[in-house]
Image (tube, rainbow over all chains, first blue to last red; front, side, top):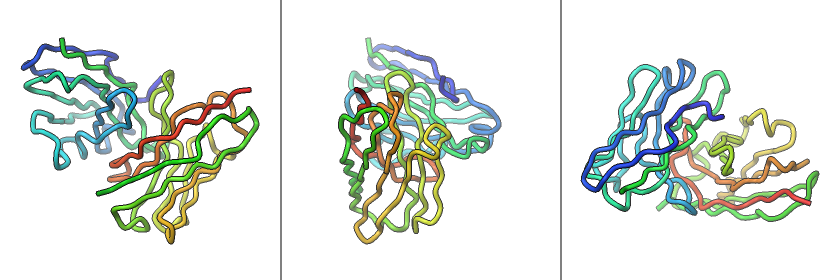
Length: 110
Length: 117
């Protein structure tokens, strides 16, 4: 079982807005930043959001992140077919003294 | 452009050893903390090990402590993971990663390690 909890699946239609949640505890999300990754099956994860709400260059502004307390969220607006992928959250865990990850959310664009 | 290229994966018998390498380019390798992260279909993404820029400080997940050793050669811009006493549950795709704020920022393409008799 993953330390951070994500819903296993999410879906939306083209143009819709979808949010993916990531729940943790005071030892990880509650006291540290969150990164989000996108992974197309068969490829490596790619950084989508860092430091809770920052986008690396090249990531469309349709992707946004937020954090409140011990939870974080990834929002995707104007959903497109190419957004079909697995999405993972990550945070440093002070107790484990290492990064911890969510179990991943598979996003389907219907 | 940051590039991380892993190699050294393959099929190994339980109890065997394997050494992974990660060749880095596009950034000042010695200035960055680096990590190994693995991924299995069943357990998802799992942090394995981290090493400081100069290489003097290392840390490991409990699941690999005492069996795996991370090292780096900054003159060659290369990260290593020596894996000993391998078990079936070490089977995974292993990624090297450049960190930002203690979390993976850039990822390599991964190398598959299969532990099976």
